[in-house]
Length: 286
Image (cartoon, rainbow, N blue to C red; front, side, top):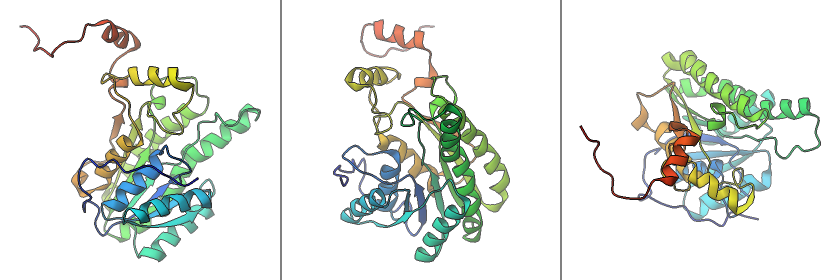
């Protein structure tokens, strides 16, 4: 099923990535609820980038390319299993051959392990770590020479608040914690090559990955943040657009929570917030 959602513009389409070439992994789509990958690929394309849409599913990748085309953007579908180094090399080369350069890599592809019921624990662990962490390293290593050849560029990694809070998710949290550590290391390794490496830690977004447990759990996720509003894939995508753009030219080695303040408080703090009577914000007393 092709994507049927609309891009929620907060500003007119612009040129924040004009002339740039980007790769977004895990950017396929197959339904009306967008994930972070397709949202990021769409925003990048509508802000002037030519986007390599990388996904293990050719159908999902084609859906995103169709969506971007309908909106007037440029993209190409790349089918690859990015847990394999040779596949990462091929994916990067295909994009560079198509568009002549590479300026941005967004390492977004991930699984939680929830769909691996019945798989032995160690095997499930290995599968999650292979995609959520090792593939980030493999794609970054393949992209770096091309980013450097173009005078520098940006790598944006998608981690999770599960990396810094225990949530009982098996390998997912540890793998995403590894993404944060890898972000710091890549920022150090490639900084003098003009390559900025930053990380986004999304919170409880309403996405295909986050849409679990039915309406009641969805409501609890909404209430878990200080803002009390529901986040979507577009919130993470807008953050990725900023970090990929020249507006973030002096930012590297940063981890940006996009979580409505969930990690800025505690469970007790949220409980107290829920009990507090609503009213206008007031300045603290002296």
